[in-house]
Structure formats: C-alpha cells, structure tokens
Length: 359
Image 1 (cartoon, rainbow, N blue to C red):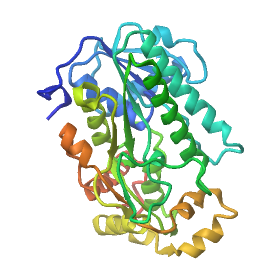
Image 2: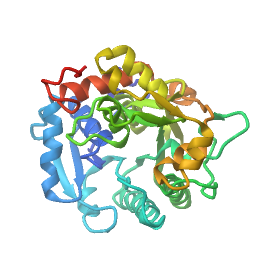
Image 3: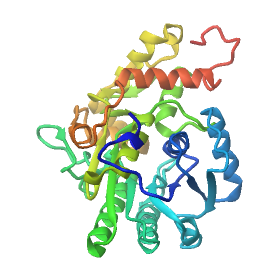
Image 4: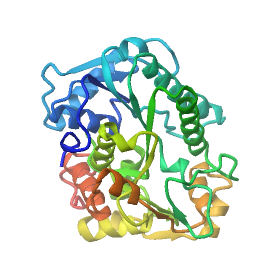
C-alpha cells in the first residue's frame, strides 16, 4: 500500500521539500514521491549536486518530468531556506552531518546538527508548513544501556553516557532541540523517525556508511569484526514510514522507531552474505573480537567506540508503534542485507567482472 492510499491520511496540497536529496534516504524519498505523483523540491548544498540527484533517479527508473525542482540551502546558514520553503506543503528533513571519520571536537558535529534541525523547523513554521517529519536516529534512543535491553520510543540516549560517540550525542541534542522548539511555539507539528542501521539498494554512486559495511565485507576489507549487535532496516521501508508519518493525523507529535526485525551482529551479517553469496566466502569476516578485545582496542581506535559502548549486549528494539499506529510493514532483515549486496554487485561496486571470486 502506498502512503497516499492511507484511508486516514488524505493528501494536502503543496510541494514536498526533501532536504539531503543526495543521500541514501533522500534519493529514495524523492524517487518514491515522484512515483506517487507528488511535486518535489530537493535541497542541495551547491548547484552542481543537482546532477547527482537526477542520476540517482535515473538508476531508480524514475522520470521526474516537470515535477522536480531544486533549492540551494545549507544547514549552516539561513540563506536560501525561505525560497526553499515557498509554496511547500510538507517537509521531510533528512539532511544531517555524518562524519567520514571521528571529528576532532564534538562541536564539529553537534553544532551543525542542532542548529540545522532548528533552522529547518523554524523556517517551515515561518512558511506556514503544518508539519515537519525529521529523520533522527536510533542513536538518540538506545545507547544508554538498560538492564532488560528493551528499547522503544519512550527511551532516550543520555548525551552524558560515558564513551558516547560525538555523532550519537549530536543526534540526541538535535532531536531534543527540535522537540523543544515545536512545543514552545505550538503552531507547527513535528514527527520524528528514528531509524536503526539503514541498508538496502543505494541509488547513488557513493555508498552510505551502513551500505559501505556490506561493501567492505564483500571486498575483503573486514577480515575481523567487533562483537556488536544492532538493528537493521531497509531504506525503502524508512521512506515508507516517513511518507506515512507525513500524511497520517495520528503521527503528529510522535516518535517512531524504524527497525526491520531482531538485532543482528556484524558476524551474523557475514553469515547471511556467506549463505547467499558462497563465491565470496573467502572474502568475508572470519573472526569476531570479544567484548574485552573491543574495549581495549577502542582506547586507540575511535571507530570502535560505538561497539565498546554497547558491550556486546543484544538490544530488543520495538517497531510495534509504527506497525500499529501507521500500519507499517517492514521487510525481513535477511531480505534487506541480500538486496544491499545484490545492488552493489549489479552496480559494479564489489569486484571486477573478471575476478573469479566475484559473487
């Protein structure tokens, strides 16, 4: 069922503004909206990025005709947001800083994430947009450990949690700032989606961090992985949940976790790939670090701090609210991981065609 078919959610007039149009979620959002007949305006940081969005749509087999426009706007500046929101009826705010490597200072991530979220919500309010759907993260939900390891939308990561990576802290503080703004002003609705690890077929030529994990495994770049369990969700299901939240009356003022099923580990993911792509078996991770090994290694390797924070525990992450309130039905985790790998292989992002180890 498409988001536009929801009986309880009649469409409202106006263009849909999608921020972060070149990203994994943004590109899929634009493609899905155009398929369903919406007019879309995508924000890009510079005009040259428009070509990347159009190329992604070409990979998705979507012809935007005259229903796609662009606006140049940066989360770090007020410039351009008024024009971007002119005539807009809905906002999907996906854009947020994501580090290629751990930042030197926390403020490098926290300030643009928090100020960017506030800038978009405030500009939408000024433009008279009734609701903003903001993409936050499970990082804002479940990185302060609980005795029972069960997490739902009522949970929040404590930004003062020992060892919490700067990215996770930025997601908490940005989301809280957006909620505080919406509650203070009262004349704009906010809905927040908190995805776990987002996988699925990329439309762009630069795999996201999560998709890059599958690419790394299938190219032999990850012979060893840390013990760490996490939620998985398909990007197509993340987009579906955003569109449902954009239109459904009961989504106003709510958070929704996006997770496809039970948590898996990096080693579990390697097992899924090994079963479905046996030709790549010798390239996949063969060793899993213990909790103690991860904790020790994280002292000198910032990339392992995430795993060290979770201590090998298995979170039980609920998607019941999204299912019951919005009728969301995500794909199975295995299906998502396999689809990610298939897409990378078909796109030539794994191994040369003449490599006999190619899956």
